[in-house]
Amino acid sequence: MEPLGHRNQRVLEAARLHRSRHRRETGRTILEGPNLLEEALAAGVRPEVVFALLDDQPSAALARSHDIELVPVDPAALKRLAGTTTPRGPAAVIAMPAPGPVSGTGMIVAWSLGDPGNVGTLIRTAAAFGWDFGHTPGTADPWSPKVLRSGAGGHFKTGIIPVDSFESLEALGLTTVATVVSGGVDPATLGPGRYAVLVGEEAAGLPSEVEDRARLKVTIPMPGGMESLNAGMAAGMIVYELSKPGGEGWGRV
Image (cartoon, rainbow, N blue to C red; front, side, top):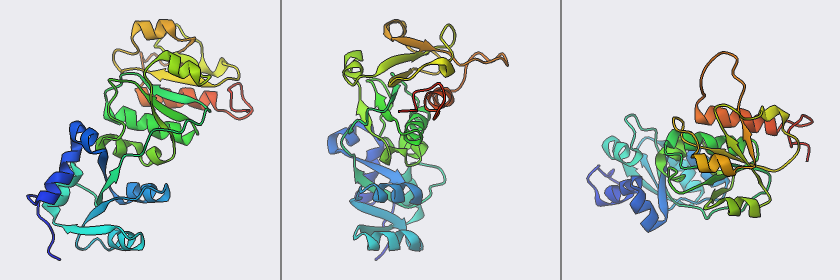
């Protein structure tokens, strides 16, 4: 079969999944790379189609072993599908999984966090510690290709849940914890509990009304004098403290 070019209608239709509106309308997204494809398959997510270069034998074998349609494409088409300067094939179209279920262990909540890289890092962190990931309106689409790349497979190992209010978090029995630059308690001192760690924009932080309403506020001690940390890094440090087995965190449940 002759590989499809970057102007082929089927390639163009799949590439439109880089647009949030098209993802919402179709309920589908596109992922790039062998690792993400393998993570999706391991989680029982079956792609509708896999696009790969003619000489990509591992992707061809993977598609055949799972009875998935394989469509060969040329390098220009793969670049359009992947949306990256130096794409790493294959590219696969998947239906976006339904939200949840909620594990009830704990939740990292991206509160109007617009940076796709940070959102993906939070998903990866939540998955690493067995927490769920929540996202409010205004947060970068968790199922965008950029967030999927940053999440490194975490999407398929954790619940990804829309959050529309404090009430929805409280209904899950979670104690809301605002991450603030100063004035909060050291997360290492928190006792046992089930927490929803709220993470805002890197520059602006959480809205003041969100900080005020949260049950607790935490601040990472930084004796080195830096004003703040990357949002994903800060969340990882906080969740680590709250998840320490046998420590002061709640991880002894």
